[in-house]
Structure formats: C-alpha cells, structure tokens
Length: 412
View (cartoon, rainbow, N blue to C red):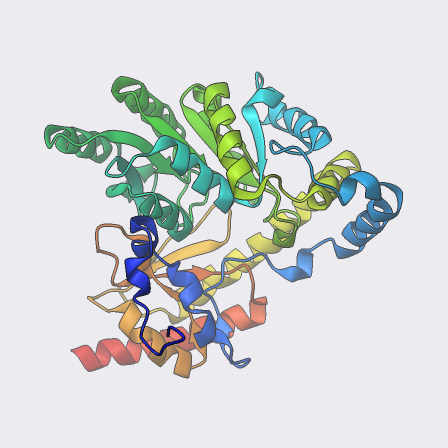
C-alpha cells in the first residue's frame, strides 16, 4: 500500500525479465518436508556425514589467523590466483591438457556459472536443446534469460543423436536461432544416465556442423562407482573451442563453501568475467582459500575415494529396495555414479498429484514432470539416495511402494 492507502501495482514496475522468472520446483517443496518423521528422498544435497569438517575447520582457523589480510578481503573477479593455478594442475590429467588460467573462472557455486554462461550466450528466443529430463536449476537459468527450451530424447546411453539432429533441423526450418546444447553427461540429474563415449563425439560433430556451443554441466564427475565411468572423456576435452565446462566442489567437499569453476574458450571466459563483475565483484576469498588448501594438502584426493564407497552403498541399497517393493511393471535407472535414480511408474500415474499422499505416508520425492521441458514425465519421480541413511532409504522405498500400489489399485 502507498502511505495514502492506495494499492501499488508492482507488476507495473517490474521488468519483463522479473515478470517471467521461474522458481525452482524442488525448492518449492521445502516447506512440505519440515516434519521430522518424513523420510525425504527429494533433496539432492550431499550427506553431511561425509563432510571433512575437522580438516576444513583447521584450515579455516589457520587461514583466518595467518592470512586474514587476504582471506577476509575482496579478491579478483576471475578467482583467487592460487586456486586458479591449482585448478590448471587439477584439470590437466582429467582431460584438459591445454587448459590455462585464461580459460578458468571461479564462480559462487555452479548455479552461478550456469546463470553467467546463459547471460553471455543467449538472446531472448534463442533455442537451447536440453535433455529429457534435465536438471531443474539449468532449466531455470535458461528460462530466466528468455531462451526457448527444446527437449531431446534420452535412452540408457544419453542423448539420442537422431532426435537431436531432427530437433535442430525442425527449429531452423521455423526460422528460429538454435544456439546451444545443454547436457549433464555423467550420472545425470535427475535420470542418473551417463552419456556414452561415442555419443560424446557425435554431439561435438553436431555442434561443429551447426555452429553451436555446448554447456557441459558436470558436478558429479568424481562420484563414480566403477572405473569404466571414471574413464569417460569430457566433451570439453574433445573440443575445448566449443564447450563451456562447469564443475563444483560442492559434491566432494561441502556445498556451503560455494566454490565452483568453469572452463571456457578464452573470448567467452573474458565476457563471463565481465558479467560476474556485475553480479558479485568476486566470490568469497575465504572459501576459495579453504578449497585451495584442501587441494594443496591432498585432502581432496584422500577424501573422494571414500565418497565413492559411501554413495555406492546407498545406491545399492535403493536399487535392492526398489526390486523388493516397487509395483510390477515399474522401471528405474541404475546410475553408475552420482546421487539419483529416476523411477517410472507402470501406468499413467500422476506423481505430482500423489506427492501429498506420499508425504502423509511419511516419504517424499521430487515429481518428475518438473524435469521435462516438453510437459511429459508425469509418471516419473526422482529418488535421491545421497542424504538419508541406508536404513531410512529401505523404509522410505517400502512406504513409497505401498503408496504406489494403493494408487494403482484404486485407478483400475
């Protein structure tokens, strides 16, 4: 209200961008999950049980006492210089032999990397090809910059190349500008699917043919459960001139540190740096210094193998529980890493409509339709095995199985 009692029409003063902003569907669920008795298979956050808290506490304390003059100060927009150079050494044996500091930008979480990349690449109405299903945070970032999102089918080996080509040709015939491909190649959120090696090369071939940029979102890369998964080549290593690669320390150290990075062709990295100046000037110097010390001391290399064993056990528990409790005709993915299983019900079940019933039964999940930009996926749900204990995963899937069977019997 104005001070004179008249109502203010805030829509009239908001920008076109603000009026079109889309909320993250997972975060809208948070108020529903506050009850402590609910077993939540919804959040995709790492388990706090594996945060290396003592080591990080010692590092933070030492940095604040001994290097307070830099750790508590503003810093370069591109990122702490020591961390940027450490990332060069970290990335070179991981398929980036020619990466240099000019290609790297440290961001405040990988979501900021997605936001900045979309802002420098996309004009309103540009077509972006995304997987069906795809990560909600990526969908939100792309939507909020005005992109036209077009879904491309996935199978057990990731993006179906024939469908990718068909969608590009179709939208170009309509006179639309197809600009880029957004992909999560490893243990995808939400499907758990990993992009096959041959398709990685084929996606780059398509990008070259049609002059597209690829945004490669790879936060789960180090959480693999087999050596076959460990050997997969990043798309950015196949053609670093066409790929913006985004990764994070959130899954392997702690998300509260908010340290991620992107690797991009030098001209694009320079533009992203300018965009970042307008967003936050610089990421947290303290957080970056802690991560750099974790890398320098060997904590990261020592810690990650234990994470793989920890999450692999949880994955196995969830798969066994689904085998024992899911209704006949159900299907689900078995990820080779990461945090997620995508469950598909045997009939035309509405997972979003069923969620309140599941919550009353003491279990929660993320309805799958939010991950599908074409409006499909109503009978799917994302199940996260990362947060709850094995015992709670078993009980949660048991409760979910009972809810599903009751719903299917009622609908017949």
